[in-house]
Image: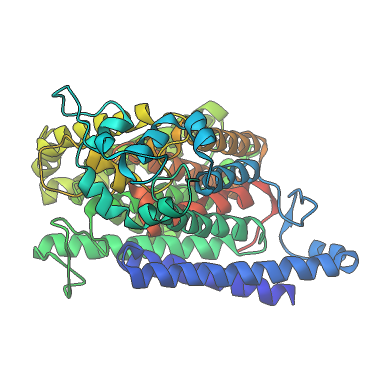
Length: 526
Protein backbone atom coordinates (compact mmCIF):
# COMPACT_ATOMS: atom_id res chain seq x y z
CA UNK A 1 0.00 0.00 0.00
CA UNK A 2 2.76 2.46 0.91
CA UNK A 3 4.65 1.66 -2.28
CA UNK A 4 1.53 2.30 -4.36
CA UNK A 5 0.93 5.67 -2.72
CA UNK A 6 4.60 6.60 -3.18
CA UNK A 7 4.41 5.77 -6.88
CA UNK A 8 1.24 7.84 -7.32
CA UNK A 9 2.97 10.80 -5.69
CA UNK A 10 6.12 10.30 -7.75
CA UNK A 11 4.28 10.14 -11.07
CA UNK A 12 2.14 13.10 -10.06
CA UNK A 13 5.29 15.14 -9.44
CA UNK A 14 6.67 14.07 -12.82
CA UNK A 15 3.44 15.15 -14.53
CA UNK A 16 3.72 18.59 -12.88
CA UNK A 17 7.39 18.92 -13.85
CA UNK A 18 6.47 18.27 -17.49
CA UNK A 19 3.18 20.14 -17.63
CA UNK A 20 3.80 23.41 -15.77
CA UNK A 21 6.64 24.87 -17.87
CA UNK A 22 5.25 23.55 -21.17
CA UNK A 23 1.87 25.14 -20.43
CA UNK A 24 3.42 28.58 -20.96
CA UNK A 25 4.66 28.74 -17.38
CA UNK A 26 1.14 27.98 -16.08
CA UNK A 27 0.30 31.69 -16.05
CA UNK A 28 -3.06 31.25 -17.78
CA UNK A 29 -6.16 30.40 -15.71
CA UNK A 30 -6.69 26.92 -17.19
CA UNK A 31 -3.08 25.81 -16.69
CA UNK A 32 -2.81 27.38 -13.24
CA UNK A 33 -6.05 25.70 -12.16
CA UNK A 34 -4.84 22.34 -13.47
CA UNK A 35 -1.60 22.72 -11.54
CA UNK A 36 -3.43 23.64 -8.35
CA UNK A 37 -5.89 20.75 -8.58
CA UNK A 38 -3.06 18.28 -9.23
CA UNK A 39 -1.14 19.48 -6.18
CA UNK A 40 -4.31 19.25 -4.07
CA UNK A 41 -4.80 15.67 -5.26
CA UNK A 42 -1.22 14.81 -4.30
CA UNK A 43 -1.70 16.44 -0.89
CA UNK A 44 -4.71 14.18 -0.32
CA UNK A 45 -2.71 11.10 -1.36
CA UNK A 46 0.18 12.12 0.90
CA UNK A 47 -2.23 12.70 3.80
CA UNK A 48 -3.75 9.25 3.30
CA UNK A 49 -0.23 7.82 3.34
CA UNK A 50 0.65 9.58 6.59
CA UNK A 51 -2.59 8.44 8.21
CA UNK A 52 -1.93 4.89 7.06
CA UNK A 53 1.57 5.04 8.55
CA UNK A 54 0.19 6.42 11.80
CA UNK A 55 -2.39 3.65 12.07
CA UNK A 56 0.12 0.94 11.22
CA UNK A 57 2.89 2.56 13.23
CA UNK A 58 3.99 -0.56 15.09
CA UNK A 59 4.30 -2.73 12.00
CA UNK A 60 5.40 0.06 9.69
CA UNK A 61 8.77 0.67 11.35
CA UNK A 62 10.20 -2.59 10.11
CA UNK A 63 8.49 -2.13 6.76
CA UNK A 64 9.98 1.32 6.21
CA UNK A 65 13.43 0.09 7.08
CA UNK A 66 13.14 -2.48 4.32
CA UNK A 67 12.92 0.30 1.72
CA UNK A 68 15.97 0.87 -0.41
CA UNK A 69 15.88 4.44 0.86
CA UNK A 70 16.95 4.87 4.45
CA UNK A 71 16.71 8.34 5.88
CA UNK A 72 17.67 10.13 9.03
CA UNK A 73 14.59 12.34 8.88
CA UNK A 74 13.10 13.47 12.19
CA UNK A 75 9.32 13.09 12.42
CA UNK A 76 7.21 15.38 14.59
CA UNK A 77 4.19 14.27 16.61
CA UNK A 78 1.90 14.92 13.66
CA UNK A 79 3.84 12.45 11.52
CA UNK A 80 5.41 15.16 9.32
CA UNK A 81 9.08 15.44 8.52
CA UNK A 82 10.84 18.18 10.47
CA UNK A 83 12.55 20.69 8.19
CA UNK A 84 14.13 24.10 8.88
CA UNK A 85 11.21 25.67 6.99
CA UNK A 86 8.36 24.22 9.05
CA UNK A 87 8.26 26.96 11.69
CA UNK A 88 8.86 29.88 9.23
CA UNK A 89 6.07 28.49 7.04
CA UNK A 90 3.63 28.42 9.96
CA UNK A 91 4.55 31.96 11.03
CA UNK A 92 4.34 33.19 7.42
CA UNK A 93 0.86 31.75 6.94
CA UNK A 94 -0.15 33.15 10.33
CA UNK A 95 0.93 36.64 9.24
CA UNK A 96 -1.18 36.44 6.08
CA UNK A 97 -4.19 35.22 8.05
CA UNK A 98 -3.67 38.12 10.49
CA UNK A 99 -3.80 40.52 7.53
CA UNK A 100 -7.27 39.12 6.70
CA UNK A 101 -8.76 39.35 10.18
CA UNK A 102 -11.10 42.36 10.63
CA UNK A 103 -9.75 44.63 13.35
CA UNK A 104 -11.43 47.34 15.36
CA UNK A 105 -10.65 50.90 14.19
CA UNK A 106 -8.74 51.65 17.39
CA UNK A 107 -6.56 48.57 17.15
CA UNK A 108 -6.04 49.04 13.39
CA UNK A 109 -4.87 52.60 14.02
CA UNK A 110 -2.23 51.27 16.41
CA UNK A 111 -0.86 48.39 14.30
CA UNK A 112 -1.13 50.11 10.90
CA UNK A 113 -1.84 53.84 11.12
CA UNK A 114 -1.66 54.50 7.38
CA UNK A 115 -4.08 51.69 6.63
CA UNK A 116 -6.45 53.31 9.10
CA UNK A 117 -6.01 56.68 7.36
CA UNK A 118 -6.52 55.04 3.97
CA UNK A 119 -9.88 53.61 5.04
CA UNK A 120 -10.90 56.81 6.79
CA UNK A 121 -10.25 58.95 3.71
CA UNK A 122 -11.60 56.64 1.01
CA UNK A 123 -14.56 54.74 2.49
CA UNK A 124 -17.70 56.87 2.99
CA UNK A 125 -19.39 56.24 6.28
CA UNK A 126 -16.39 54.64 7.92
CA UNK A 127 -15.51 56.25 11.27
CA UNK A 128 -18.07 59.02 10.70
CA UNK A 129 -16.12 60.31 7.74
CA UNK A 130 -17.34 63.67 6.42
CA UNK A 131 -17.47 64.70 2.74
CA UNK A 132 -15.01 67.50 3.41
CA UNK A 133 -12.36 65.01 4.40
CA UNK A 134 -12.70 63.38 1.00
CA UNK A 135 -12.08 66.65 -0.75
CA UNK A 136 -8.88 67.46 1.07
CA UNK A 137 -5.88 67.72 -1.20
CA UNK A 138 -2.20 67.72 -0.65
CA UNK A 139 -0.66 71.14 -0.42
CA UNK A 140 2.57 69.92 -2.01
CA UNK A 141 3.22 69.31 -5.68
CA UNK A 142 5.45 66.25 -5.37
CA UNK A 143 4.62 63.24 -7.56
CA UNK A 144 5.21 60.66 -4.84
CA UNK A 145 2.71 60.52 -1.95
CA UNK A 146 4.24 60.41 1.47
CA UNK A 147 1.27 59.14 3.48
CA UNK A 148 -1.87 57.08 3.11
CA UNK A 149 -3.94 60.27 3.39
CA UNK A 150 -2.26 61.64 0.29
CA UNK A 151 -2.85 58.31 -1.42
CA UNK A 152 -6.54 58.66 -0.79
CA UNK A 153 -6.59 62.27 -2.00
CA UNK A 154 -4.77 61.34 -5.21
CA UNK A 155 -6.89 59.40 -7.70
CA UNK A 156 -9.37 58.36 -5.02
CA UNK A 157 -11.99 57.70 -7.67
CA UNK A 158 -9.82 54.99 -9.28
CA UNK A 159 -9.30 53.29 -5.95
CA UNK A 160 -13.01 53.47 -5.23
CA UNK A 161 -13.77 51.58 -8.43
CA UNK A 162 -11.36 48.83 -7.48
CA UNK A 163 -12.67 48.46 -3.94
CA UNK A 164 -16.43 48.66 -4.29
CA UNK A 165 -16.76 45.38 -2.41
CA UNK A 166 -14.61 46.80 0.36
CA UNK A 167 -16.83 49.90 0.54
CA UNK A 168 -19.94 47.80 0.97
CA UNK A 169 -18.23 45.90 3.76
CA UNK A 170 -17.24 49.17 5.40
CA UNK A 171 -20.85 50.32 5.50
CA UNK A 172 -21.85 47.10 7.24
CA UNK A 173 -19.04 47.00 9.79
CA UNK A 174 -16.44 49.32 11.23
CA UNK A 175 -13.98 46.48 11.65
CA UNK A 176 -11.53 46.29 8.74
CA UNK A 177 -8.50 44.11 7.90
CA UNK A 178 -4.91 45.21 7.37
CA UNK A 179 -5.11 43.99 3.77
CA UNK A 180 -6.49 46.77 1.59
CA UNK A 181 -8.00 44.15 -0.75
CA UNK A 182 -8.78 40.93 1.16
CA UNK A 183 -9.89 39.03 -1.94
CA UNK A 184 -6.46 39.45 -3.57
CA UNK A 185 -4.78 38.40 -0.32
CA UNK A 186 -6.92 35.25 -0.14
CA UNK A 187 -6.06 34.33 -3.73
CA UNK A 188 -2.36 34.84 -3.07
CA UNK A 189 -2.64 32.76 0.10
CA UNK A 190 -4.16 29.90 -1.89
CA UNK A 191 -1.27 30.16 -4.35
CA UNK A 192 1.41 30.03 -1.67
CA UNK A 193 -0.34 27.05 -0.07
CA UNK A 194 0.03 25.18 -3.36
CA UNK A 195 3.80 25.68 -3.37
CA UNK A 196 4.11 24.89 0.33
CA UNK A 197 2.04 21.77 -0.26
CA UNK A 198 4.44 20.60 -2.96
CA UNK A 199 7.44 21.10 -0.67
CA UNK A 200 5.75 19.13 2.12
CA UNK A 201 4.73 16.36 -0.27
CA UNK A 202 8.32 15.77 -1.36
CA UNK A 203 9.88 16.04 2.10
CA UNK A 204 7.35 13.53 3.41
CA UNK A 205 7.96 11.12 0.52
CA UNK A 206 11.66 10.18 0.79
CA UNK A 207 11.01 7.03 -1.23
CA UNK A 208 10.61 8.88 -4.53
CA UNK A 209 13.29 7.99 -7.05
CA UNK A 210 15.39 11.12 -7.21
CA UNK A 211 17.39 10.06 -10.26
CA UNK A 212 14.20 9.63 -12.28
CA UNK A 213 12.89 13.03 -11.16
CA UNK A 214 16.12 14.79 -12.13
CA UNK A 215 16.32 13.05 -15.50
CA UNK A 216 12.80 14.30 -16.25
CA UNK A 217 13.75 17.83 -15.14
CA UNK A 218 16.82 17.89 -17.38
CA UNK A 219 14.85 16.44 -20.30
CA UNK A 220 12.15 19.10 -20.00
CA UNK A 221 14.74 21.87 -19.64
CA UNK A 222 16.59 20.59 -22.70
CA UNK A 223 13.38 20.36 -24.75
CA UNK A 224 12.26 23.88 -23.88
CA UNK A 225 15.77 25.23 -24.56
CA UNK A 226 15.89 23.54 -27.96
CA UNK A 227 12.47 24.96 -28.74
CA UNK A 228 13.66 28.45 -27.82
CA UNK A 229 16.76 28.17 -29.99
CA UNK A 230 14.64 27.04 -32.95
CA UNK A 231 12.27 29.96 -32.38
CA UNK A 232 15.26 32.28 -32.35
CA UNK A 233 16.63 30.89 -35.60
CA UNK A 234 13.28 30.96 -37.41
CA UNK A 235 12.32 34.39 -36.07
CA UNK A 236 8.82 33.38 -34.96
CA UNK A 237 6.99 35.24 -32.22
CA UNK A 238 4.51 32.42 -31.66
CA UNK A 239 4.83 29.82 -28.92
CA UNK A 240 5.01 26.35 -30.49
CA UNK A 241 4.56 28.26 -33.79
CA UNK A 242 0.82 28.26 -33.03
CA UNK A 243 -0.03 30.37 -29.96
CA UNK A 244 0.18 34.13 -30.27
CA UNK A 245 2.10 35.63 -27.36
CA UNK A 246 0.93 38.86 -25.74
CA UNK A 247 4.59 39.49 -24.86
CA UNK A 248 7.04 41.01 -27.29
CA UNK A 249 9.78 38.56 -26.34
CA UNK A 250 8.53 34.97 -25.90
CA UNK A 251 11.10 32.22 -25.60
CA UNK A 252 10.63 28.47 -25.61
CA UNK A 253 7.28 27.64 -24.03
CA UNK A 254 7.35 30.81 -21.89
CA UNK A 255 5.51 34.00 -22.76
CA UNK A 256 8.41 36.10 -21.47
CA UNK A 257 12.10 35.36 -22.04
CA UNK A 258 13.01 36.48 -18.51
CA UNK A 259 10.73 33.83 -17.04
CA UNK A 260 12.30 31.20 -19.25
CA UNK A 261 15.69 32.37 -18.00
CA UNK A 262 14.50 32.09 -14.41
CA UNK A 263 13.41 28.52 -15.02
CA UNK A 264 16.48 27.36 -16.92
CA UNK A 265 18.79 29.05 -14.37
CA UNK A 266 17.52 26.50 -11.87
CA UNK A 267 17.77 23.53 -14.22
CA UNK A 268 21.40 24.08 -15.33
CA UNK A 269 23.07 23.98 -11.87
CA UNK A 270 20.95 20.96 -10.94
CA UNK A 271 22.07 19.23 -14.14
CA UNK A 272 25.72 20.09 -13.39
CA UNK A 273 25.37 18.62 -9.91
CA UNK A 274 23.80 15.51 -11.41
CA UNK A 275 26.73 15.24 -13.83
CA UNK A 276 29.30 15.49 -11.05
CA UNK A 277 27.43 12.93 -8.98
CA UNK A 278 27.85 10.40 -11.78
CA UNK A 279 31.66 10.75 -11.62
CA UNK A 280 31.59 8.78 -8.38
CA UNK A 281 35.15 7.51 -8.49
CA UNK A 282 36.49 11.05 -8.56
CA UNK A 283 35.03 11.70 -5.11
CA UNK A 284 36.77 8.75 -3.52
CA UNK A 285 39.73 9.64 -1.30
CA UNK A 286 41.27 6.25 -1.98
CA UNK A 287 41.90 7.01 -5.64
CA UNK A 288 43.95 10.10 -6.19
CA UNK A 289 45.49 9.44 -9.63
CA UNK A 290 43.28 8.88 -12.64
CA UNK A 291 44.29 8.31 -16.22
CA UNK A 292 42.97 10.40 -19.07
CA UNK A 293 41.28 7.29 -20.43
CA UNK A 294 39.24 6.97 -17.24
CA UNK A 295 38.07 10.53 -17.54
CA UNK A 296 37.16 10.11 -21.22
CA UNK A 297 35.23 6.96 -20.46
CA UNK A 298 33.20 8.70 -17.77
CA UNK A 299 32.68 11.75 -19.99
CA UNK A 300 31.46 9.82 -23.00
CA UNK A 301 29.21 7.65 -20.85
CA UNK A 302 27.43 10.91 -19.90
CA UNK A 303 27.69 12.57 -23.29
CA UNK A 304 23.95 13.12 -23.62
CA UNK A 305 23.88 14.89 -20.27
CA UNK A 306 26.82 17.10 -21.25
CA UNK A 307 25.11 17.91 -24.56
CA UNK A 308 21.86 18.81 -22.75
CA UNK A 309 23.74 21.16 -20.42
CA UNK A 310 25.47 22.85 -23.35
CA UNK A 311 22.16 23.39 -25.17
CA UNK A 312 20.51 24.83 -22.05
CA UNK A 313 23.38 27.27 -21.48
CA UNK A 314 23.27 28.26 -25.13
CA UNK A 315 19.51 28.85 -24.90
CA UNK A 316 19.94 30.99 -21.79
CA UNK A 317 22.41 33.28 -23.56
CA UNK A 318 20.24 33.29 -26.69
CA UNK A 319 17.28 34.55 -24.67
CA UNK A 320 19.26 37.75 -23.98
CA UNK A 321 17.83 37.94 -20.47
CA UNK A 322 20.33 40.08 -18.59
CA UNK A 323 19.10 39.09 -15.16
CA UNK A 324 19.04 35.43 -16.13
CA UNK A 325 22.57 35.44 -17.52
CA UNK A 326 24.01 37.23 -14.50
CA UNK A 327 22.11 34.92 -12.12
CA UNK A 328 23.50 31.90 -13.97
CA UNK A 329 27.07 33.20 -13.77
CA UNK A 330 26.62 33.82 -10.04
CA UNK A 331 25.28 30.32 -9.47
CA UNK A 332 28.18 28.73 -11.36
CA UNK A 333 30.66 30.80 -9.36
CA UNK A 334 28.94 29.66 -6.16
CA UNK A 335 29.08 26.08 -7.45
CA UNK A 336 32.87 26.01 -7.61
CA UNK A 337 33.44 28.25 -4.60
CA UNK A 338 31.49 25.83 -2.42
CA UNK A 339 33.54 22.93 -3.77
CA UNK A 340 36.79 24.76 -3.10
CA UNK A 341 35.80 25.82 0.39
CA UNK A 342 34.76 22.31 1.35
CA UNK A 343 38.02 20.93 -0.03
CA UNK A 344 36.10 18.36 -1.95
CA UNK A 345 38.32 18.72 -5.00
CA UNK A 346 41.83 17.71 -4.05
CA UNK A 347 44.90 16.70 -6.03
CA UNK A 348 44.37 15.67 -9.62
CA UNK A 349 40.63 15.41 -9.06
CA UNK A 350 40.41 19.18 -9.09
CA UNK A 351 42.25 19.39 -12.39
CA UNK A 352 39.99 16.76 -13.94
CA UNK A 353 36.76 18.40 -12.82
CA UNK A 354 37.95 21.86 -13.81
CA UNK A 355 39.01 20.49 -17.19
CA UNK A 356 35.49 19.12 -17.67
CA UNK A 357 34.03 22.49 -16.77
CA UNK A 358 36.39 24.40 -19.07
CA UNK A 359 35.58 21.99 -21.90
CA UNK A 360 31.88 22.76 -21.47
CA UNK A 361 32.60 26.51 -21.36
CA UNK A 362 34.64 26.35 -24.55
CA UNK A 363 31.88 24.46 -26.37
CA UNK A 364 29.28 26.95 -25.19
CA UNK A 365 31.28 29.99 -26.25
CA UNK A 366 31.96 28.38 -29.61
CA UNK A 367 28.21 28.31 -30.20
CA UNK A 368 27.85 31.82 -28.79
CA UNK A 369 30.37 33.14 -31.30
CA UNK A 370 28.55 31.28 -34.05
CA UNK A 371 25.15 32.85 -33.25
CA UNK A 372 26.71 36.28 -32.72
CA UNK A 373 28.25 37.42 -29.47
CA UNK A 374 27.61 41.07 -30.31
CA UNK A 375 23.91 40.69 -29.60
CA UNK A 376 24.62 39.27 -26.17
CA UNK A 377 27.23 41.87 -25.19
CA UNK A 378 25.03 44.70 -26.47
CA UNK A 379 22.08 43.43 -24.48
CA UNK A 380 24.12 43.13 -21.28
CA UNK A 381 25.58 46.63 -21.63
CA UNK A 382 22.41 48.39 -22.80
CA UNK A 383 21.41 51.06 -20.27
CA UNK A 384 18.06 51.46 -22.01
CA UNK A 385 14.83 52.87 -20.70
CA UNK A 386 13.53 49.59 -19.15
CA UNK A 387 16.38 49.76 -16.64
CA UNK A 388 15.55 53.35 -15.73
CA UNK A 389 11.88 52.41 -15.49
CA UNK A 390 12.64 49.61 -13.05
CA UNK A 391 14.71 51.90 -10.87
CA UNK A 392 11.76 54.30 -10.65
CA UNK A 393 9.48 51.33 -9.98
CA UNK A 394 11.74 50.24 -7.12
CA UNK A 395 11.69 53.74 -5.66
CA UNK A 396 7.90 53.82 -5.81
CA UNK A 397 7.74 50.44 -4.09
CA UNK A 398 10.01 51.66 -1.32
CA UNK A 399 7.63 54.59 -0.87
CA UNK A 400 4.83 52.08 -0.33
CA UNK A 401 6.96 50.28 2.23
CA UNK A 402 7.77 53.52 4.02
CA UNK A 403 4.04 54.18 4.47
CA UNK A 404 3.19 50.60 5.51
CA UNK A 405 6.45 49.46 7.15
CA UNK A 406 5.31 46.86 9.70
CA UNK A 407 2.56 44.71 8.16
CA UNK A 408 2.44 45.99 4.58
CA UNK A 409 -0.66 46.57 2.47
CA UNK A 410 -1.68 42.92 2.27
CA UNK A 411 -0.30 39.89 0.49
CA UNK A 412 -0.94 40.16 -3.25
CA UNK A 413 -2.13 43.79 -3.19
CA UNK A 414 0.77 45.45 -5.00
CA UNK A 415 -1.06 46.00 -8.28
CA UNK A 416 -3.95 47.70 -6.46
CA UNK A 417 -1.93 50.05 -4.27
CA UNK A 418 0.80 50.87 -6.78
CA UNK A 419 -1.36 53.07 -8.99
CA UNK A 420 -1.47 55.56 -6.09
CA UNK A 421 2.32 55.72 -5.97
CA UNK A 422 3.15 55.39 -9.63
CA UNK A 423 5.60 57.96 -10.95
CA UNK A 424 6.72 55.92 -13.97
CA UNK A 425 5.87 57.96 -17.05
CA UNK A 426 4.04 55.37 -19.13
CA UNK A 427 0.59 53.88 -19.61
CA UNK A 428 1.43 50.35 -18.47
CA UNK A 429 -0.35 48.54 -15.65
CA UNK A 430 2.17 46.97 -13.27
CA UNK A 431 1.08 43.78 -11.56
CA UNK A 432 4.48 43.24 -9.92
CA UNK A 433 7.46 45.36 -9.00
CA UNK A 434 10.11 43.32 -10.90
CA UNK A 435 11.83 42.64 -7.58
CA UNK A 436 10.35 39.91 -5.41
CA UNK A 437 12.09 41.20 -2.28
CA UNK A 438 10.71 44.72 -2.58
CA UNK A 439 7.27 43.34 -3.32
CA UNK A 440 7.41 41.29 -0.12
CA UNK A 441 8.38 44.44 1.76
CA UNK A 442 5.43 46.37 0.36
CA UNK A 443 2.91 43.54 0.74
CA UNK A 444 3.99 42.00 4.05
CA UNK A 445 6.07 44.72 5.64
CA UNK A 446 9.30 44.25 7.51
CA UNK A 447 7.88 41.39 9.58
CA UNK A 448 7.00 39.34 6.51
CA UNK A 449 10.33 40.11 4.87
CA UNK A 450 12.26 38.96 7.94
CA UNK A 451 10.25 35.75 8.13
CA UNK A 452 11.11 34.91 4.52
CA UNK A 453 14.75 35.91 4.93
CA UNK A 454 15.25 33.94 8.15
CA UNK A 455 13.55 30.90 6.62
CA UNK A 456 15.84 30.95 3.58
CA UNK A 457 18.99 31.41 5.66
CA UNK A 458 18.07 28.68 8.15
CA UNK A 459 17.23 26.21 5.40
CA UNK A 460 20.35 26.78 3.29
CA UNK A 461 22.58 26.81 6.37
CA UNK A 462 21.18 23.47 7.52
CA UNK A 463 21.54 21.95 4.06
CA UNK A 464 25.13 23.14 3.59
CA UNK A 465 26.22 21.98 7.05
CA UNK A 466 24.76 18.56 6.37
CA UNK A 467 26.30 18.60 2.87
CA UNK A 468 29.80 19.12 4.33
CA UNK A 469 29.30 16.06 6.56
CA UNK A 470 28.26 13.79 3.71
CA UNK A 471 30.75 11.53 1.94
CA UNK A 472 28.46 9.98 -0.64
CA UNK A 473 29.20 11.51 -4.09
CA UNK A 474 25.58 11.16 -5.17
CA UNK A 475 24.24 13.16 -2.23
CA UNK A 476 26.98 15.77 -2.55
CA UNK A 477 26.56 16.30 -6.29
CA UNK A 478 22.76 16.53 -6.36
CA UNK A 479 22.57 18.70 -3.25
CA UNK A 480 25.26 21.08 -4.49
CA UNK A 481 23.48 21.51 -7.83
CA UNK A 482 20.16 22.12 -6.08
CA UNK A 483 21.60 24.69 -3.66
CA UNK A 484 23.17 26.61 -6.55
CA UNK A 485 19.85 26.45 -8.41
CA UNK A 486 18.25 28.14 -5.38
CA UNK A 487 21.05 30.75 -5.41
CA UNK A 488 20.31 31.41 -9.09
CA UNK A 489 16.59 32.08 -8.67
CA UNK A 490 17.17 34.15 -5.52
CA UNK A 491 19.63 36.29 -7.49
CA UNK A 492 17.32 36.64 -10.47
CA UNK A 493 14.50 37.67 -8.14
CA UNK A 494 16.42 40.89 -7.47
CA UNK A 495 15.48 42.13 -10.94
CA UNK A 496 12.33 40.20 -11.83
CA UNK A 497 9.22 38.52 -10.43
CA UNK A 498 9.97 34.89 -11.27
CA UNK A 499 8.54 33.71 -7.96
CA UNK A 500 5.15 34.98 -9.16
CA UNK A 501 5.34 32.74 -12.24
CA UNK A 502 3.50 29.58 -11.11
CA UNK A 503 5.71 27.08 -12.97
CA UNK A 504 8.92 28.63 -11.61
CA UNK A 505 7.62 28.94 -8.05
CA UNK A 506 6.45 25.32 -8.10
CA UNK A 507 9.79 24.20 -9.52
CA UNK A 508 11.61 26.01 -6.72
CA UNK A 509 9.44 24.14 -4.20
CA UNK A 510 10.36 20.86 -5.89
CA UNK A 511 14.07 21.66 -5.77
CA UNK A 512 13.91 22.60 -2.08
CA UNK A 513 12.22 19.31 -1.32
CA UNK A 514 14.63 17.29 -3.45
CA UNK A 515 17.80 18.70 -1.90
CA UNK A 516 16.41 18.22 1.60
CA UNK A 517 15.66 14.59 0.82
CA UNK A 518 18.95 13.97 -0.97
CA UNK A 519 21.26 15.45 1.63
CA UNK A 520 19.59 13.43 4.39
CA UNK A 521 19.40 10.05 2.70
CA UNK A 522 21.66 7.29 3.97
CA UNK A 523 21.37 5.12 0.89
CA UNK A 524 20.36 6.08 -2.63
CA UNK A 525 19.07 4.19 -5.63
CA UNK A 526 17.94 5.18 -9.09
